[in-house]
Amino acid sequence: MRTLIKPIPYASRADVFHILVLPDVHDGNAASDEDLLRRFVDRVRNDEHARWLGAGDYCEFINRRDKRFDPLSLPEWLQGAALAKLAQAERAHFLEIVKPIGPQCLGLLCGNHERTMELYNEIDVYGTICEELGASEDNPLALDMAGFLRLSFRREIGKAKPDTWTYDMYLTHGWWGGQLMGNGVLNLERVFGWAVADCVIAGHDHKAKAFPLARIYPRKNGEVEQRDGWCIGAGTFLGQPRYMEQARPLKRGWIELVIEPDKRTVQVLQ
Image 1: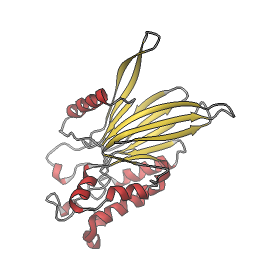
Image 2: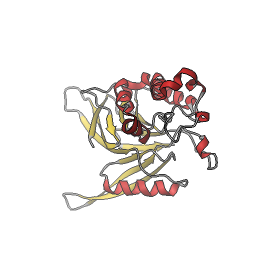
Image 3: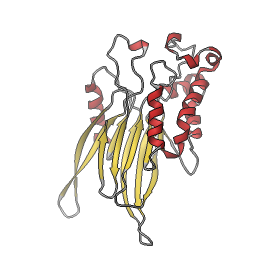
């Protein structure tokens, strides 16, 4: 586990930043909403104050030898020659769409679908996705399955010392499921209890949700301070795949954090 520290300079007290969470996309499944993914990319690309982070499971990554493989779940662009190298074709398709916003990426989680490809097929799709989106020694993006992301907002004030405010996130792909919201809500609250961060974000269960929580802290002057935080489930771009046709469909979309660093306020849009 690691902490990524990302400096975000800004010039005006009025500047507002939008941090978009790319949820479980599962590109390569016919039920994945490619149009929505392209709208996400356009939303980020067209806003100089927009940044984004990935929650994992960027592609389906289920090859033909996998017991979960279902040829009827493949989109048209994965037919024919692409069947010979499913994982590579899915990764290339995903990157072709997302690569334009690589410079605005803050961090990328590894999902269980990426991890399975590495464990059982010896294909490091996660590492190459990070590299293609701009990861380097000076710009690390890989958080693996979980880690911390510290946003360091710095307002430049001429030659004076910059005004700095940090906002800490704990990111995890998640490990829980269930058809109802309750399990995800309970687990997010549990994680918020042991991961010291201003915000907890998880993927995996495909259910978008956001709710505030608060902690109390002792202060040196003897008073007690309350600090508010957020618990966020990233959601999904996957609608109702064939293996879930007997379950309720999933709401597709993404979540945005609206951060005004000079006011030190955070709102969440669903």
